[in-house]
Image 1: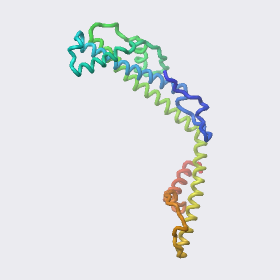
Image 2 (image 1 turned 60 degrees about the horizontal axis):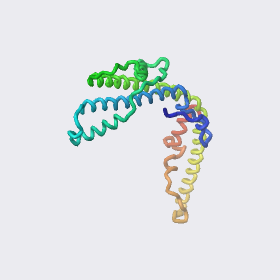
Image 3 (image 1 turned 90 degrees about the vertical axis):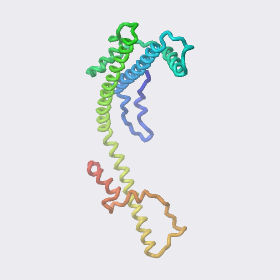
Image 4 (image 1 turned 90 degrees about the horizontal axis):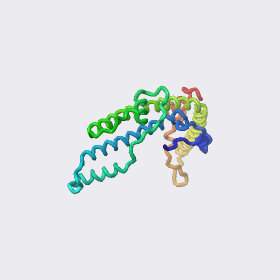
Length: 237
């Protein structure tokens, strides 16, 4: 099974932020790993069903009687027959797991598997039943994993809330200074125009849209003013 975790120390980036990661949490990791096991077994069961169907389709028919379509199907059958047989595994069933998850864990352990039967219909029906149960387990286990992720995501957000808003306020202060300088340049430009000074190639103004987008704090409808209101409503400014 692939290792999903990474060292906690690696979560700190070059800026020095130590942001917690869901995949580093043991509970979330266990839920995700069990979900991966279910998905792997579902894919294997679907291929096993295809193999059983193709073996029944060809029966004792000789390969020389195959048409073009059957040749492709027979090549697919050979590929499926090269796969390792289905084996039992013993995953740990988490406490309080949904019923569908418990059933799927039993399938992986080999508990509900019927004895081999020569009847192809019964064999296909047994595989189809396991596929249905495995899909139900995947849905249920995904809900378990997502619930863990939602809870941990909220906990992590609370943990980094102070650092997050500290950086947001610092960014806003930079934007304020930028807006003030943009206002100053704007007033300077107005004075030049009022004085009759033509803006030729001597006075270069880069064609940037940032000052226009950010606007001025003198305008209550500007982006910088809306930015201030949001931070004030959050109680961080």
